[in-house]
Image 1 (cartoon, rainbow over the protein chains, first blue to last red):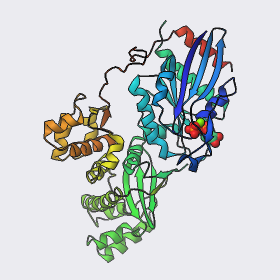
Image 2 (tube, rainbow over the protein chains, first blue to last red):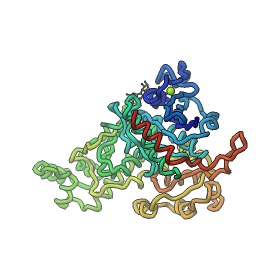
Image 3 (cartoon, each protein chain N blue to C red):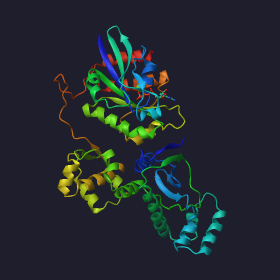
Image 4 (cartoon, chains in turn purple, blue):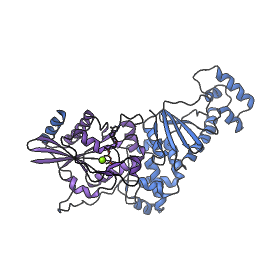
Length: 176
Length: 273
Ligand SMILES: Nc1nc2c(ncn2[C@@H]2O[C@H](COP(=O)(O)OP(=O)(O)OP(=O)(O)O)[C@@H](O)[C@H]2O)c(=O)[nH]1
Ligand SMILES: [Mg+2]
């Protein structure tokens, strides 16, 4: 049985747990705990370790989805995540510009290890004050070859689309 | 939809960059306590700026600055009333009450000063209303102003590390040009020190090395590069690190290549979900 991984990362409250719940075939193994410190001002529960979801591709292949925890740094997770990691989804809460800098730090963190294929998902596009994907691209100063996709983590088709776009990037780097 | 936020988290220079690169038309309203300013943009360029406590027609401003008499101001206002879709600034030029260059000079100086004052705000709510246009009587410049120019000047006024650190965490970062910087610098007047730094950017030297080679302080080099960065001229990247090692002793560099057939299987599976 071969296992491949995708990592779902982003700042606190971006929608990582929601994203994985929407697409996973198993009940998401989440580690929600009452939030401490500043996070408590935004939400009651935050992910303290990792979210874990799973999609069986066939008898011999399974895709694991890992969501990074929101509150603390996650250097420690790199070794766990990097083995067999196909790509990365960076989720952004498009309604909260105060998280854009943190988002850049997270992208930098992953890229400092390795040029991992990634896409940016402009989440919560259903909210009235959401910044559009193009505005987010400028706000985060993402190079033009990086895809910035509209996303609603609560909507299965939208989550599927983000994963398929990421797979498209991965495909371009794959070999025969 | 308006874009809202606080400049504590998303700075004025970041916003100006977004307006520039996004060719935005609309108004950026900034407020803190009882102060309120509005910057109006047309296709990414600044056309005017107003303050709540100084929201006067262009004619009043010019009278105050001794560039126009009260009689001329009234004449222009009268002529403007019968014209649709024309700014009062344009009427002043058409009636030859003031030369175009002179009007530009006076308004630009006035508007630049109000924008520069905004760079000192550490916090304040912002709201960008797309498509919103200024009142036609506002002090609208005949020639819109490129925002890179404003960003550079605004950054020249930064005198603390705090904001710089956010984009330039340390002086071991390497500076490199993006796209065609020469094209973009046309709208910017670089000062001598800025040219010295500009000329040293080669995609290899770190900020610390540039400071050493120019004999300038690291703070000055970082502040100047921060300006270039904010104006979208350069990028600051981490110096390529020695390949990190996994605990297993294996080097971690190239992303492992996966087989196309495997990716195709995953794609088909997700499509079918
Ligand atoms: N309207 C809307 N709400 C969303 C969307 N995605 C997530 N949310 C909500 O945003 C909040 C945060 O979502 P989570 O999935 O807990 O975010 P997270 O990234 O896992 O948060 P941490 O683990 O604390 O970092 C929850 O209330 C979600 O229901 C979306 O697309 N639209
Ligand atoms: Mg979570």
